[in-house]
Length: 137
Ligand SMILES: [Zn+2]
Image (cartoon, rainbow, N blue to C red; front, top):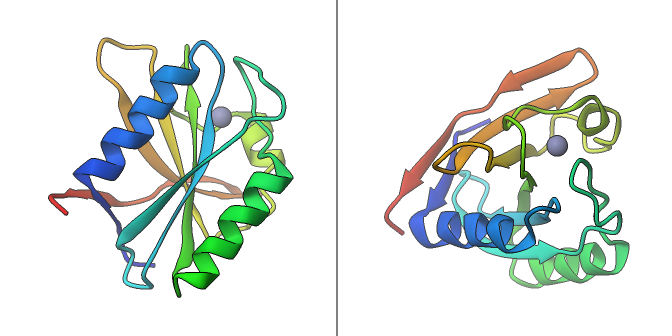
């Protein structure tokens, strides 16, 4: 899997979404081309409205999936925030991942002075850091 290439404006939008949702977790989808370049950003409602877990709203996810398909893009990553803890997958994140290793999970950690964005491959065997690169556009 190629590294996820995240344009600066998408990165800023994801961090802004996480900050706006805090102290609750936010979630969303990033889509783009098969070479890993993110082109589209879809905020998704967190049905759990919780500070420690999230559940992607099914209606939002369906709308995002349709838009991704219409754009000829692919879902590359899911993102969510950890408003008060490190951006490391929780046990619930592992149990709730139904996508296997086909997508990257981006977690925005807001516990420190600066947002800490990390990417992960989540599998039942464990979590492995995923490569991502900030690009200009
Ligand atoms: Zn989490």
